[in-house]
Image 1 (cartoon, one colour):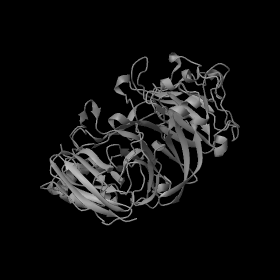
Image 2: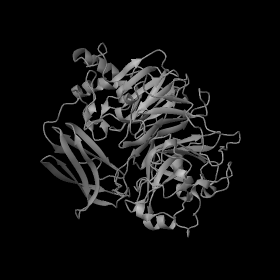
Image 3: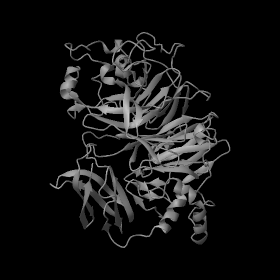
Length: 584
């Protein structure tokens, strides 16, 4: 298999460099033909492109890379951006052409779970980092999804630590805690205030909206089924600390409401964003008059004691979002229903629901019955249901022509279906954790898992404001870069660790090293007492010249003091230590 030479975070050829090397690549391919295989049955990239597909550009970030790609309907690169950090997990284009992405800076071992991150970055169209915000420490950590707001602020999902004592005070049954603590979710709205700063201007905490019938001595004791606006603290996710695992946040500007996807409870929730932070912590205020209480919930009425297993509609769902205005189904909610553990078997669907919303933005419910609807308004499943199944990640988007773009995340496959459920476009992400797969080769499957997963993808029409005055000239297909990069970067003759640059440094420095074979690599930072400060690399890597950036922070995300530090590489039998100097 032809593979790209990567650093630990992804491909080395990236950003506008990819687009501007097209002419050179074409010349090289005349001498060394690219394994593009356009005449053969495609194995990666675009495998179907019907004229009924919505014309636009698709944005996605392979989970194994730090690159984000924008491609046209033929799979050709329009732009790409590279970060130092792996995605965590969503990416968005903004109306000025900037890229907003969630990333994982690593270094926070206090709490880890699926989708963990810790920072948000913004890059301009040309790949320059213009803003970075961190929220990762001993008590908080960003994860999964973010949502850009019309005012330039960003909504972010984060965990927050609650000790067993705090759980007890909130009426929780601490014997149910399998990990001795709980990390429920909260939402923060961040206003960028500088290149690396932001102010939290609004927040909502699930912890302020709990009910329980376990401990009558606590203030939130009550009848669970009489209060669907609150969440039962003792309806736990098998006692795991990652209680809610909220994996999607979406904003409706006209309603001033937020929809959240909480897959471990198999529910979506809607809350009021018109509140102040103080009102969001209570039960009154805002347009709804209900403060931060749940306005609506759907998917699993067992959680609030108004249903049984037979009434469950969602199964570890992802990407709950309102359908955009002026798009067929506008105002309805689209959900990727992953479908693990369905009673009738495991398979995925994309479900569109019509909520029981009134003109004033409130949601109706009959007494003693769960929130409707009883069934989705529209749903897509494969003709043979088991042919379409992604147990985790994934997403869906309603397009202006009425089609629906679907990301089957586990297999890194994107496809577009009509309202009549006919597939008119299909794409297989060629960027795997082992490099970029060339056309004609297949995606490696390791221990039963595909190596090219993608959290979700988004299609932007050609009239999207962010494309005004931008160079939209198509470049190579991503899969073509496998051969191109392989021929452009020779394999080093031996292992080597180089002096960091710059040195001394503040605030960050780059560490470069050579690998001459496939090998498991660790690269760690130590202080002069030999205490480990940070692990920068811990992965199986391919041959090539690699690099990693250290931002002068420890494993908890805290800036370290000025001084001399050691960095040590271990690659198979090769190991070496060098010194570097940080000047604050």
